[in-house]
Length: 257
Image 1: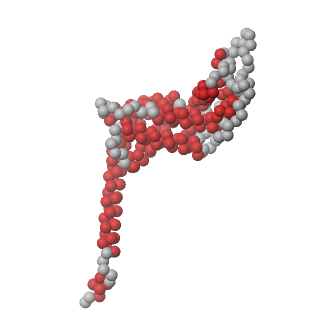
Image 2: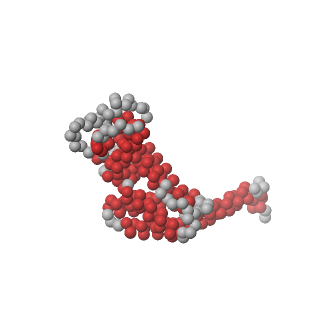
């Protein structure tokens, strides 16, 4: 991203406090180091994107809340879209590390319950931003946004495999867990947006589904996959045997009286 010229003095967008100024200290300008100023703007943007749909958040409002000039936001982050991508990127990075380390003392059902609870906590705290990311609301199916979401799904699957203590996960199990992540998104949408399910119901749905997928569905699919490979090997062996017959052998046999 091309670096913009910084607004003069950085304080240009914030009025100098005057005697008797009753504005809250939050809205007044304070000189901060570059990284702290950038983090401050990002914190305000994260909160506003979490509280409001993407289309209702304006960079001018973010600047006003952070007590800076709007040009400073464009200098640090570029467009509103780029700022939103930074927020989503930070959200997915935070959510991905919520999985607890493997605990040998916990049973598999207990571990599943814990993982689902942590996921629901994260979803509840960041519902608006997360659904905006999933829907790419406000600017269409953005490839970079979808890349961030898909990379988050991949990291989540690997965390789940580690927490569930799966020693040698197959490609089939990874595919099943990616499908489960879609179910989790749909279930939380029913809870947080549609209000057709409450948290306890979603907890039960996701925990039992995950346990069934890991202990029953994935092994059944892996068995089918193994059976298919075995059948394919038999066909290849039979074809190789036929192809290895001496030329004309079958025809000579038919020609005998």
